[in-house]
Structures are given as structure tokens and as C-alpha cells.
Length: 157
Image 1 (cartoon, rainbow, N blue to C red):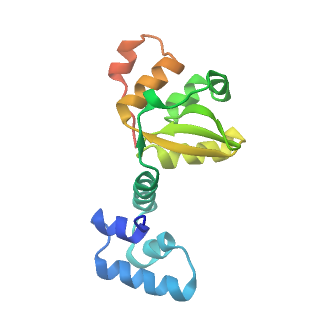
Image 2 (tube, helix red, strand yellow):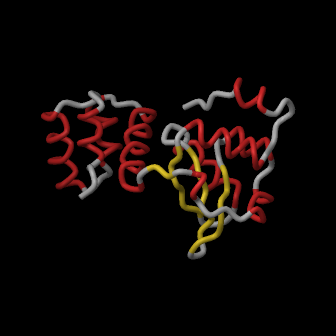
């Protein structure tokens, strides 16, 4: 069983167990999304909800080793180098009609917003360690300065 969003928020210290239970009770009667209710009732920021959701998603899919992931070089053309680096996305392949893309847990919310807005194909995501993603991006979308750019790069939340 996967962790529920409220449990993740409690684990992150954003909500108490009592607050989570209050949101769940209201959610049961209203049918409204947990995150929206947590924002309204307890002032939880949308950024905190996004971080918790990304942690929940990462827990469901687990982290992958990009070196062992099947990658199709043809999908690289779906993103420009700037987009790949800016939105922390590494297209890997098409699978079951979805474009499988790698990102980090912290980069997931931003990556998803970008893909929904700009890529134009259904996508699913795998979660990679930050250093693995940096190396994959450097290989697929080399930046001027090569390894120097890689050493200086840090992915942001």
C-alpha cells in the first residue's frame, strides 16, 4: 500500500496527525482534494503540497538507475537542450503510448507542469538520483564546457 498524501505531510512535519485526521474527515463529507483542504484549513502552502505529492509519487514508482534504463536517442529531439536542463527532464523512450521521462523527486512538479503545457504527448516519469540525471543530461544534451558544466550544475527544487 502506498503512503497517502496526508501521511506524507505528517512525516514531513507539515501537518500533525490531528490536522491530517481533520482534513480526512472533511474530505470524506465534501469529496474535495486533500491538498486543497489542507491549504484552506491549515495554511499549508501549495509548494509544500507539491513537495509532499512528489515524495508520494517517488515512493510509488521508486528510484531508477538511469544507466540500466532503456533509452531511445530518437526521443531526445522532443526537447531542446535548454528545456531539458531548465526543467530537469531526460526523455527516455515511448512505452505504452506514453513518453517516459526521467527527473528528480524535487524536480517532478515543475517537470510535470512543463510537459503538460509544452510537450504535447502523454508522459510518465521515472525518478532518478540528482547526479545520475545530471550525467544523463550531459550525455544527451551536452553543454558548453562539458564536465566543467556538469560539476558546476545543481538541480533546483
